[in-house]
Image (cartoon, rainbow, N blue to C red; front, top):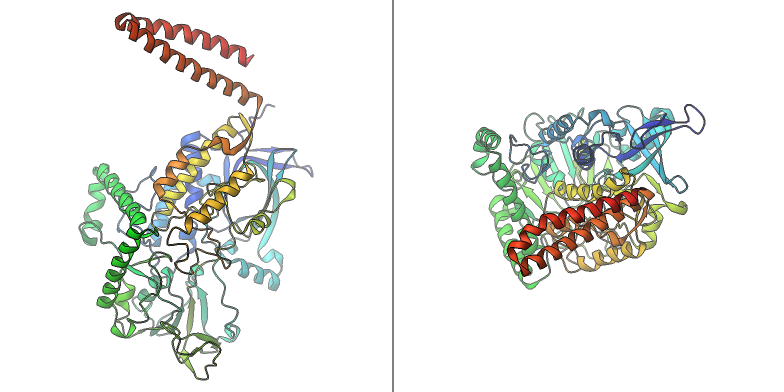
Length: 623
């Protein structure tokens, strides 16, 4: 039986060497994976693909982050797919459940739910040179265990055995693999230097792995961290339905806090009126989205560069932000809420509630260092470490304080130094991707999308693709459209292998690191954008407009392309079409110049002759 290559099928029945073949395998069902799946169907007409997701549901970070107050800090009309807009957002900055529902609705509209397989962890992918295919190892998980962190799964297997997490394993093969794993996957662990967590008698959880069974009512809560998650969770948990008795937030250094933009017309108008207006007049929604995009791009040139103009504008904005902080937060916190680094070199907090919540007597903010954990509380130093250390380096602090704690919430972000981990990715000649990155200084990928030695492997929203000022969904969409330009030829059978050239990948990575030094992400401060050795694998050193244009026009000369016989023939036909079209233009222009009337009359006859030659030449090439 003749089976088309772009069809999912079983090879070798139930023999030892049997496997399932997928034309395209997508790792991850977050926003990038959803975008890739939808566009495969819409642009290329392909429904023979599979999306493997470790978690128990679709939505990526919006599936797993369920802490109180979780919300989008980008206006949702911009934090959504351009190919599938939602004109009925109930809030200008919707909370997690509404965003998750949007992604689920997109999946339903494009009918890709049956292409997604949850509770399945892609633990390893290996390039098979002879077959020109990828072999992927799938681990089928006990439902729900994929929502646990890597450490939690490991601890469970050690305590209860492997089958408490993994119920089966299978090896499959694919022509193309698209990694849509995302960066916010594994939560940062508890700091190892802070002892005593095992003795704690209360409840403990990370905001990225929220435990809904935790009862906060009339409890003393300690929140460790001062990033976006902490700024969202702290104001919420003293309110209904949580009603914490007290909240102590432990902060090492302050973030820059930007007042969250107010919805056009106000939140009440947006909730009640905007769905009707934008649904009946979609051009209004598209116009607002475009306006937000250009305003976001303007911020790049205003605040993120190290030019005299940007530096001056940053100073003006910083004064404005500090003035806002002093008008909103209690005076006792002004000194510890004044950052000592350039704004924008760390992730900004777009806030509507956190600074105001510090007026609540139930909430206490401190920079006293966390020392250890006791059964019913935490031990902190008696003096704050910000804005200036009261204790000289090397001097021992003898006094300590105990803060009562029934619940400890860790809000210290994610592991971002280990891109694509824990999946082991083995390319040509048995080379592991993490080893390549270690040798070259840090995580990197040409256009944030491809690495030499790993053919037909494409990363969506890979290293150096975040701009820090724009919607990550826009960046993901750009990467998806870029990737489809390569996938198209692979699925048509015109190309066997796409692989970026080594020298081009290395040159790209070098350019990224050098150009980032000319931005606020260079030496402005230490942030999670940079690894411990100073390597920045997160941010892009140019505007999103620049990145979008690069994605629209791939540099084919930067790639090793292994054409099939069919691809070689079609390439010759396309070249011939281009030459004959150019010739027709030249002949027509010459004829019109000599005799405008006769030239215009002759153009159809010239076109017919050239078309006849083209068809004859094409037939010979096909033969």
